[in-house]
View 1 (cartoon, rainbow, N blue to C red):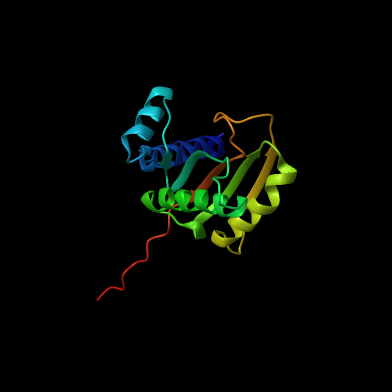
View 2 (view 1 turned 60 degrees about the vertical axis):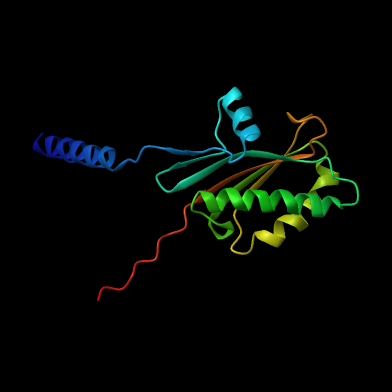
Length: 159
């Protein structure tokens, strides 16, 4: 009985200290007024940061602008995602998981993978690719959602 009491007491202490260390979530909104207004209308953030993890909302790529290849168009989307990661204190090296939603996975996967590989290097994150009927944006080809950690802070040597 004493063992159970000690175990419960230890668990209570751990629970209290864990709760005390939890940080409130931070949110990022677009820097431009139109993007911010859209997200406020539908009630979501560009990214949420909680306990060192960065959760980016999905970003839709496509249709491909005239004069640009699909790979170049996707690379432009990855460049945009990189700016959000940077604002959140993260980088491509910190990406843990990518989820992509494709309206035509057979057509979009090769150029998307080529564009992604310009930014994401080994060791690679997890990646789930899902074929869907449609995306929110008319003509959208792929939606890209990312989870990353915040870049670990380098400790300065003590003097």
